[in-house]
Length: 74
Image 1 (tube, rainbow, N blue to C red):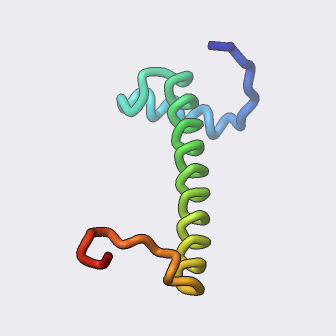
Image 2 (cartoon, rainbow, N blue to C red):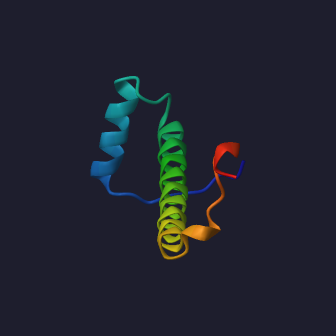
């Protein structure tokens, strides 16, 4: 891992420290890494949702392109 220096508002640091004291995270570093990972997951979910919406629109416009889910439709 690479160590980075980060400037954040004091209020944010205090909140992170509270989370650590409450046992939600092991350390400030753990909190920041977890928050970044959650953001990455959110971005992946948003991209997946966009793809689903696009595919849904395509399926509405061209239902013949859909593949059957079982053999009974073949």
